[in-house]
Image 1: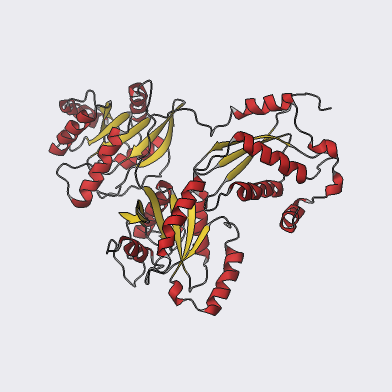
Image 2: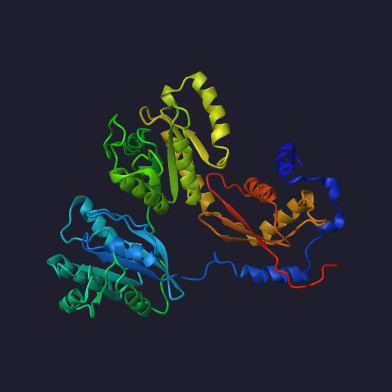
Length: 487
């Protein structure tokens, strides 16, 4: 056992002389069967294709409000202006014990141009990958020419469509919504997404429309999504423009120029990536207000929708508490992480030495994050971003075979067993990888493990299987008490 291992395990009072040979014998056949049975109960394991429900409609008819009503929390960004939602964003939902994925889309408009055309294309792609489409119409306005054009688009998609008459707040408006039968999509379902009126009946209709064999294709298969996040004025837009080799985002010396997330398809390292330039986060979302509050929500949504995040830090300024909060936000979202120290051209030798100490002190919670020293102004080392992105994404989606995982853990536990507690040491019976993106591992044990030992196992997993750039989650499933004697 090397010195770093002993230092970490000292936190759980490890003493090698407390163990004998019997404490780390291999588990018996009954233990193996019990662990395998428990493995089938893991909530995170793949349960087969999950139905996909796409929410489509004109701008500002209340699609995102309806999504929030369905998922039971305010996660999709809502504002009383059209065009807040631009991309397809998928959320997990549950109704009457049935899981499904709800996909929020931007407003669909016929003859759209420029950005509106790209938003409409995203909505059409969501229809093609969905099992059921929720077509939302503003019942107070009635069927418009754009609604009728959208119906023709939906019919070309050939998917089951549930017509939603939104913004119906009372019985009189419900009666008036009957004229939406004219769209030819069947019965309109009157709801108030804002107040919840009629939402239960609507969800019953959605479940009834789901086919027996759903496709389960929830997220678009296209360029990897990369979120550029950080405090204001650290150079996110400048880096995007450098990568794109053109002015894709407005750059100004005044902090806070970017408010809305800006999506850009950029070719970097011979591959097309979808970069999302986000608003600078000055403070916690809960303490923001006004435009800054909504910008913070959109940035948080951009992180959730991304696969990997590049957190930009100003290299010639001290690492701030807000920098650490942003990094924690990305890690807790389970996204692959690259920390880019921008403005490296302004860093002198003294600052490099000081920064090294700050990294050791302030970034010790994410030692697995990939780090790069770049300069968006001069182009220094920006060509290293593509290899770093590929590495982080590869490790983010890495799956370890169960046999190899358990061989590694058996050797690890024999070399460094768990400390004795109450006269016995809990043992790891079996382990499995419950999922990817990020990698999630479950340890089946004879009893609870000390948090320090779990951290030790996590670090050894990283060293053995190389998860650089990706968070990993390790959870413990203690064996249920069943009265079986342990001789």
